Length: 149
Image (tube, rainbow, N blue to C red; front, side, top):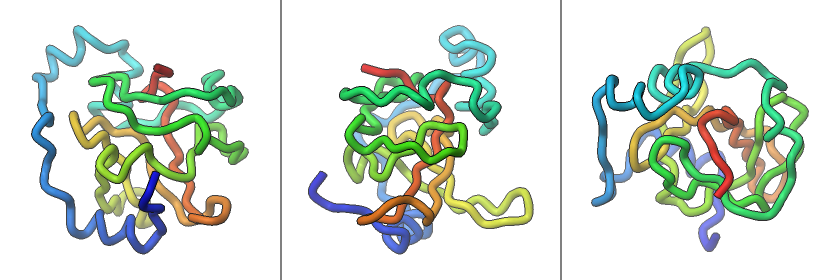
Protein backbone atom coordinates (compact mmCIF):
# COMPACT_ATOMS: atom_id res chain seq x y z
CA UNK A 1 0.00 0.00 0.00
CA UNK A 2 1.50 3.32 -1.03
CA UNK A 3 -0.45 5.71 1.21
CA UNK A 4 -0.30 4.65 4.85
CA UNK A 5 -3.39 5.83 6.68
CA UNK A 6 -3.14 7.41 10.12
CA UNK A 7 -5.80 8.17 12.74
CA UNK A 8 -6.11 11.75 11.51
CA UNK A 9 -6.56 10.61 7.89
CA UNK A 10 -9.23 8.07 8.94
CA UNK A 11 -11.11 10.81 10.82
CA UNK A 12 -10.79 13.07 7.75
CA UNK A 13 -12.24 10.30 5.55
CA UNK A 14 -15.11 9.77 8.02
CA UNK A 15 -15.90 13.48 8.00
CA UNK A 16 -15.42 13.90 4.24
CA UNK A 17 -16.36 10.63 2.52
CA UNK A 18 -14.85 9.76 -0.83
CA UNK A 19 -17.42 9.66 -3.66
CA UNK A 20 -18.70 6.12 -4.35
CA UNK A 21 -16.77 3.96 -6.77
CA UNK A 22 -18.23 2.97 -10.13
CA UNK A 23 -18.64 -0.62 -8.93
CA UNK A 24 -20.79 0.32 -5.90
CA UNK A 25 -24.05 -1.63 -5.69
CA UNK A 26 -26.82 -2.61 -3.31
CA UNK A 27 -29.35 -5.37 -2.85
CA UNK A 28 -32.65 -5.61 -1.04
CA UNK A 29 -32.65 -7.07 2.48
CA UNK A 30 -34.39 -10.16 1.07
CA UNK A 31 -31.62 -10.64 -1.52
CA UNK A 32 -28.94 -10.29 1.20
CA UNK A 33 -30.79 -12.80 3.43
CA UNK A 34 -30.75 -15.34 0.59
CA UNK A 35 -27.00 -14.91 0.12
CA UNK A 36 -25.79 -14.66 3.72
CA UNK A 37 -26.07 -16.73 6.89
CA UNK A 38 -28.20 -15.26 9.67
CA UNK A 39 -25.08 -14.13 11.57
CA UNK A 40 -23.47 -12.63 8.46
CA UNK A 41 -26.68 -10.72 7.72
CA UNK A 42 -26.92 -9.46 11.31
CA UNK A 43 -23.32 -8.21 11.33
CA UNK A 44 -22.95 -6.86 7.78
CA UNK A 45 -26.42 -5.51 7.03
CA UNK A 46 -27.72 -4.66 10.53
CA UNK A 47 -24.40 -3.33 11.91
CA UNK A 48 -24.13 -6.04 14.54
CA UNK A 49 -21.10 -7.44 16.32
CA UNK A 50 -20.14 -11.08 16.64
CA UNK A 51 -19.11 -12.47 20.01
CA UNK A 52 -15.41 -11.98 20.79
CA UNK A 53 -13.17 -15.05 20.28
CA UNK A 54 -16.00 -16.86 18.46
CA UNK A 55 -14.19 -17.38 15.16
CA UNK A 56 -10.96 -19.23 14.29
CA UNK A 57 -10.01 -16.40 11.91
CA UNK A 58 -8.83 -14.41 14.97
CA UNK A 59 -5.87 -16.71 15.55
CA UNK A 60 -5.06 -17.62 11.92
CA UNK A 61 -2.12 -15.70 10.46
CA UNK A 62 -1.61 -16.80 6.87
CA UNK A 63 -0.61 -14.94 3.75
CA UNK A 64 -3.43 -13.95 1.45
CA UNK A 65 -6.25 -11.53 1.00
CA UNK A 66 -9.35 -10.96 3.08
CA UNK A 67 -12.43 -9.99 1.08
CA UNK A 68 -15.94 -8.80 1.90
CA UNK A 69 -18.27 -11.77 2.49
CA UNK A 70 -21.04 -9.86 0.70
CA UNK A 71 -19.36 -8.71 -2.53
CA UNK A 72 -15.77 -10.09 -2.61
CA UNK A 73 -14.20 -6.60 -2.54
CA UNK A 74 -10.56 -7.01 -1.44
CA UNK A 75 -10.36 -5.37 1.99
CA UNK A 76 -7.15 -6.46 3.74
CA UNK A 77 -3.86 -8.22 3.08
CA UNK A 78 -2.80 -10.93 5.50
CA UNK A 79 0.56 -9.17 5.95
CA UNK A 80 -1.28 -6.36 7.81
CA UNK A 81 -3.01 -8.73 10.27
CA UNK A 82 -1.80 -8.77 13.87
CA UNK A 83 -2.75 -10.28 17.24
CA UNK A 84 -4.62 -7.59 19.14
CA UNK A 85 -5.87 -9.78 21.98
CA UNK A 86 -9.40 -8.39 21.47
CA UNK A 87 -11.07 -11.51 20.07
CA UNK A 88 -11.61 -10.09 16.60
CA UNK A 89 -9.31 -10.13 13.54
CA UNK A 90 -7.25 -6.95 13.52
CA UNK A 91 -5.35 -5.24 10.73
CA UNK A 92 -3.12 -2.16 10.59
CA UNK A 93 -4.17 -0.96 7.11
CA UNK A 94 -6.74 -1.74 4.42
CA UNK A 95 -5.63 -3.29 1.12
CA UNK A 96 -6.08 0.11 -0.54
CA UNK A 97 -7.38 3.50 0.51
CA UNK A 98 -10.46 2.89 -1.68
CA UNK A 99 -11.33 -0.53 -0.17
CA UNK A 100 -12.95 0.73 3.02
CA UNK A 101 -15.22 3.69 3.73
CA UNK A 102 -15.64 5.30 7.13
CA UNK A 103 -18.46 6.71 9.21
CA UNK A 104 -18.36 8.36 12.62
CA UNK A 105 -20.28 6.15 15.08
CA UNK A 106 -21.54 7.86 18.24
CA UNK A 107 -23.38 4.84 19.69
CA UNK A 108 -22.80 3.24 23.11
CA UNK A 109 -21.76 6.55 24.71
CA UNK A 110 -18.53 6.90 22.74
CA UNK A 111 -17.21 8.03 19.39
CA UNK A 112 -15.79 5.34 17.15
CA UNK A 113 -15.06 5.17 13.45
CA UNK A 114 -17.15 2.52 11.70
CA UNK A 115 -15.46 0.66 8.83
CA UNK A 116 -17.68 -0.29 5.87
CA UNK A 117 -17.04 -2.07 2.59
CA UNK A 118 -16.63 0.69 0.02
CA UNK A 119 -18.48 -1.35 -2.62
CA UNK A 120 -21.58 -2.71 -0.83
CA UNK A 121 -21.64 -0.78 2.48
CA UNK A 122 -21.34 -3.95 4.57
CA UNK A 123 -20.55 -3.21 8.22
CA UNK A 124 -17.08 -4.63 8.88
CA UNK A 125 -16.21 -3.33 12.33
CA UNK A 126 -14.46 -0.25 13.71
CA UNK A 127 -11.11 1.51 13.51
CA UNK A 128 -9.27 2.53 16.68
CA UNK A 129 -6.08 4.57 17.27
CA UNK A 130 -4.44 1.92 19.48
CA UNK A 131 -2.71 -0.30 16.91
CA UNK A 132 0.99 -0.97 16.41
CA UNK A 133 3.48 1.38 14.76
CA UNK A 134 3.93 2.81 12.26
CA UNK A 135 0.25 3.65 11.60
CA UNK A 136 -1.06 3.21 15.13
CA UNK A 137 -4.33 1.90 13.66
CA UNK A 138 -6.33 -1.16 14.65
CA UNK A 139 -9.00 -2.19 12.17
CA UNK A 140 -11.06 -4.38 14.51
CA UNK A 141 -13.15 -6.48 12.11
CA UNK A 142 -15.95 -8.97 12.57
CA UNK A 143 -14.64 -12.27 11.21
CA UNK A 144 -18.03 -13.16 9.70
CA UNK A 145 -17.86 -10.05 7.52
CA UNK A 146 -14.66 -11.38 5.91
CA UNK A 147 -13.69 -14.41 3.92
CA UNK A 148 -10.22 -15.51 2.91
CA UNK A 149 -9.59 -15.34 -0.85
